[in-house]
Amino acid sequence: MTQLRVTLFKNGQAAFRSLLREHNIEFLEEPFEPGAVKASGEVLYILAALQAARIVAPVLVEWLRGRATRKIILQAGTKIVHIEGSYSIDQVKELLETTLPETPVSLMVVQSDKDDT
Image (cartoon, rainbow, N blue to C red):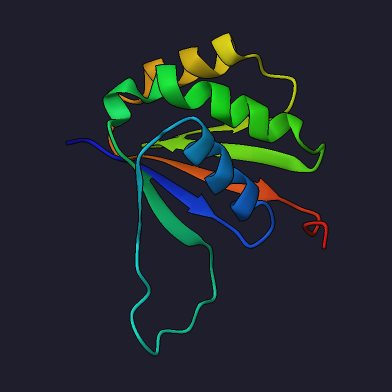
């Protein structure tokens, strides 16, 4: 099964996971090794990535529109695309459909401001 790798950073990760759950998108979290220093983002894998364009695009757009400080960086091989709040669901779906056949494909989910407490 092909999986889509997603790197989440501290800010915004709870909201992103919550949206995945609300949309019933299955994902696996990469566990940290005991004693490992956590210096970068957490990684999760969205299952059924071949269908990701259809099922993930609405989640990505909804998450982006939640705050102006959010963006998603899509990397497919040497191609890098920064997706920000002005993208429509259809545009994100098209980007995913054209890049998913390439390997490897990954997303970085970035929110530059802190979460509300």
